[in-house]
Image 1 (tube, rainbow, N blue to C red):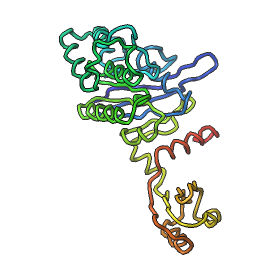
Image 2: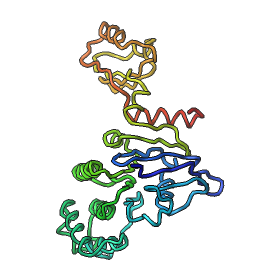
Image 3: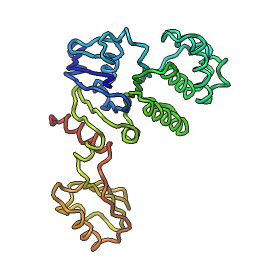
Image 4: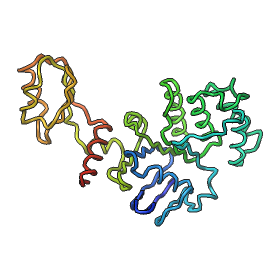
Length: 303
């Protein structure tokens, strides 16, 4: 089932084009990585999906309905700019937000208690929001995003400000939602998190799409001739090698990007004849490597 369809949306603010002819669609049960550098147009696009602002042209539909206000109760949104009523008590603020999503009191109270306990906030339900730490407030806002069981969940930097334990809790919930057939838009600057969680990605820069597709296919597109090398010696040979395009030297560990037609086995043969090698591994490029390569290329006028 197609959950979200975006066709040729365009948005300007004065002389600045924030989103430029962007199109994509999402099926149910996917985690979709919406990626890009600061100012790329991600938040503007998300706000248009949420009907906070409207596109200058193009169309957006959720579950076949272009009137987003009519189906707002099916969309959960965690914005990057956190904000929740600090003077209200924890459960009271969640009950208030549940009413805005037209949840019945009994249903809302049961869901809120469940999520507060699961997020280790049960004992704080009668405390004012301002008494919670920033991490606790982050978890509280995450609960507000999912407690009404939305079909489309939009998470803008959901791990920001969380310790590793709570990052893992939210990661597990995201995977649980995916298994239930929910569609999750995951917008982040953390390429490591995106690489672990996402089925598909869309990378935008200056409001335009610069890369998209299934994560596995994207990584294949960028080849598998990256080498992780542990060795004893200097990097003089690598600087001169016709097999090596570029490398990052971290002392006794080097990440090597080979030239397109170079043979990794030939590199191994040559390196092992010069150095004591403890590790030689052919790896696919990381999403972080791809991000840097693609964004740098688009900044220079490339694809």
